[in-house]
Length: 230
Length: 217
Image (cartoon, rainbow over the protein chains, first blue to last red):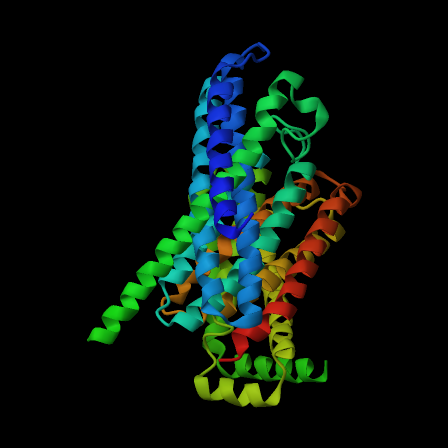
């Protein structure tokens, strides 16, 4: 299989998985639990958002480290594109969670370690965007942004891993910080949609990231050409 | 190590010569505590005391640490660059900030006790908590201020970049010092203390690895 077919094939695969997830997620049988009822279907979408966000942001941290090792601006553009994509998935994760919370807990937001961890993580990445926009010089911007990204990612990672485990009971579903992966968390009937959903969302988020990266690269080229013209 | 000590000595002498900066922070602390005393009169209970103390400490540390890279003029920076390694520069700043923050913590605690009463039941645990807490603030924020110091409107940037990163620390501190207020609690808060020390070590390690990239320009 050459590169072009492969590039096409995984995108077709993603579309197929996502179609299956949407249809299966809406129609397949789910266990009927008190209070939760049909809102349980949210798990296929809400949890997928977080998985893809973590995946994309982890990728971004690797790009930032690569930038600091090589000082190649291409890696900086890649890192920036991951943050843009990751933020969208993070915000969607919060929104899907909030809608679900309104119907099961009766409130859009509750004071819970998992929710707070998510909010703080999003804040840190928004700070990254603000930091970038406050700097004009390309190399300086890339350097400072990469340093902040690595610093923030590691500290956030420790925070999100540790906090739910030490702050006592959490109202959020899922055992000790890694929702829905522990074997007791999910009914077997739901797994046949849930696992493809995770894979599908991660592939989908990577696809979106490549599009953001390409559009950023083209924008930058246009800017360069305009600057040369003047 | 030798360089780090020399740099700390230099920083201390500089602070001593320009007392206005330190005096400013001190006054900032006094006025915020006084405002809280007036605003919260009548509704002050141990939980409020505790939350207020750590929030004020967090703001004071952002203000204090902000100037660690602002004050250096470009010429002096160049001179330092030829003399010392980046690692000793960042470690000297972190140590100095920890020292000054601890002093501010003591003053803040005295002011709180003066205006709002002393609520601490377990002094040993409290001082340990204060020490690891302020060293956590300074080790995370010093690195952030090294980043923010290179931007234009650096106070906003500093606050925006710093708050999400110290929030876990503030939460841990408020939680464990609430236990200290309720009674003898050294054993109960030990896991939290260890987590804060762990966060400190991670922040130090990251500063050691990442600061050289900020330093060379």
